[in-house]
Amino acid sequence: MEQQPDKTESRRNYFLAAFLAPLIWGFMAIPVRWVKAYPAEDILYYRILVALVIIWLFIFLFRFKFLKRDIAIFKQLADRNRNHTIKLTLLASALIFGNWFAYIYAVNHISVQSAAFAYLTCPLITAIAAFFILKEQLSALKRIALGIALISAVTMATGSLIDILWSMSIASLYALYLIVQRASQGFDKLNMLAVQLICCSLFVIPKLFINQHAFPKEAFFWFSILTIAVVFTIIPLFFSMYALTRISSSTTGVLLYVNPLIGFSLAVTYFGETVDSHKFIAYGFIVIAIVIFNWETLKNNIKSKRGSCL
Image 1 (cartoon, helix red, strand yellow):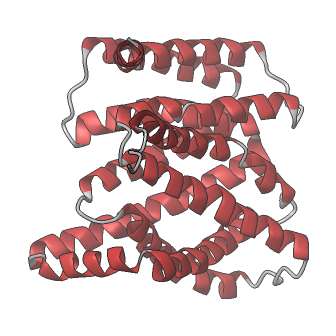
Image 2 (cartoon, rainbow, N blue to C red):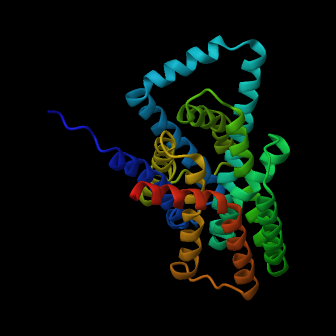
Image 3 (cartoon, rainbow, N blue to C red):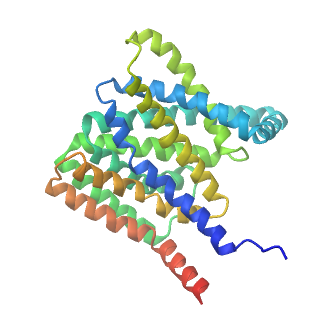
């Protein structure tokens, strides 16, 4: 008799994928620092071009049926909906381009802590943006959490205005990118990223000629860019997409906090950055805000785990 797959074990695989995505992203500051000597825009441009080539190779080799399906869906759209999809794609491209540049610049020229703080606040900023743009409702508990997050941002700004400005830029750009992604439904997310990379490259390629920076010839530079493009862009995104097929978005949202926690730990232990007293207070407030904001999700997850054990 053929043995049926264990549903619990299968769910663990999806949960593992949901955990691995932010875990990988948390270490991204390391390869970005490897190429600190290069201009931030060059790091971004070559990251986009390398990721573009690899992601399209991956799609043609392993996900061509999803590409054909999305092309068919796009062709069947009414002109108004098609134009709306194109506008959302262009906007998403601009937002992810800005987010990547701000992250690279902050890590190499501001502080790793500023990037970590950005992704701690990002889910909260996403909730605010969804409230105003998508008209998603916020419970009283979540509104209290957002108020505490605001206190955290003000506390951070009193000690280092530059840090908080870069943190808010990174977080806001990514939050708005997620909102646009929510509004653009019906298409495979990996295909959407591949198209967005094409849009970014249309800006990048002319800029490479205009900037007239020397073409990097060092093998270590290209190894670093390849690592950033594959290990820290495509692979965690694929894990995230895989996880969302079986794990709720609220659960993956909570797990995303693994990313900034690792980033902050690296900033202090690996990169030797100092943490001023105002930053400890700001991080304390944001941790409280995160717990309150995700309290209902955490409580439901604990109940479901207890129920599965009985």
